[in-house]
Image (cartoon, rainbow, N blue to C red):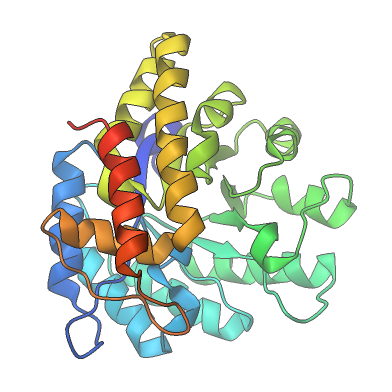
Length: 297
């Protein structure tokens, strides 16, 4: 198992690339990953929300893991294996770990009103199947499942050794700090690009971000400045990054990321329906904001 120091840094929450016929394009994904690696990425979070995971078939999710696995041994790889069904999540976990991924991550099972004990059992099962601790992908805005740090089932889970840590895609960073307080051996990754410096201040070893696909050098500068204690400079660049994030979220984040990647010379296709591609007016608006705020390498 890698140490906190080895796992720390900036991770792209990888997109899923499609060809002109709408099929998964592993080579296009690899080109983006290679670029991010040269820009200073410490690793990749593969098959998550930015990768449109729940819009893919089971075979396509495994195909994305296969494409990313070409980087095994060169960088840190985390496979998002979350599903409503434990058996499905376990199949993803076994597949990814068999391809050389370092660890798995999983959203809580959603839609049904699963109890805390049922959710914890899901994580124990994934950890057992993968042979390694699992990163909780804490995204209550989408899953509508909260990790109550006063609940005995969650306390036991977080102290059990089955959990690597948390990807805190939640504006409630106090909750993340409380999770780390329950078990200092856990690691935390900031999950909202727009709160990266706040996450670092409360103990994150790294940050996993969707916009890192197309603006990683900007965020790496923020991360490194904050790490060196240059807080004002880091915050100034975080404001600029947030201007970009605000613009992209207002028109559709995943569509905007994919459009900007194409604009930068890395075509990755359109997002899956029901996501809609950007209009020309939306493209012009996002371009203007990024051209004004984005810091290049």
